Length: 225
Image (tube, rainbow, N blue to C red):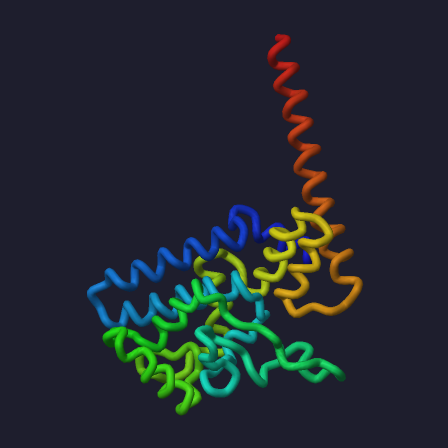
């Protein structure tokens, strides 16, 4: 399954590339003349960019202000939240995560919409009091449970769960310390996880290097003709 995800990542780039695309969508939303389209583009920008910085499997679709996501000490922080796949395991604590301030603009845009930025604090409080879902449609109804993965599929060609594999590929290139960082961001605890991703990662890199060597030999042969 992991190998399949690596294949789907081909041409997608790493987390920084996805985040760059998300910022481009957010800029596009600001330049659109249609209120409905602006709303949709803001949703898509957040659905693409947030999992690239914090992979949560499919759990982005069940995040709600004032319930699992709060504005505290100048950043958005998670409380009372455990990723769905492992939430019921004994000893699992609430997910100790937050959104980096430079990525807060994606969530701010979902809250603020077309209102003046001076109302952002008031609208944050309102969203928390109403326990508004993170992603809502232009008619304010909650987005579909698979919304984030649908956005990734449409833009990147694969569901949002690939963000975890992407994170391991990105940090795995930096050695053992990088794999530990990837596990922390992906909320993974199994001691077997680093070896699993490392084996696939190393195989992929050796495979690519071997292909490059073969092509170099081919070019050398052509040069002799």
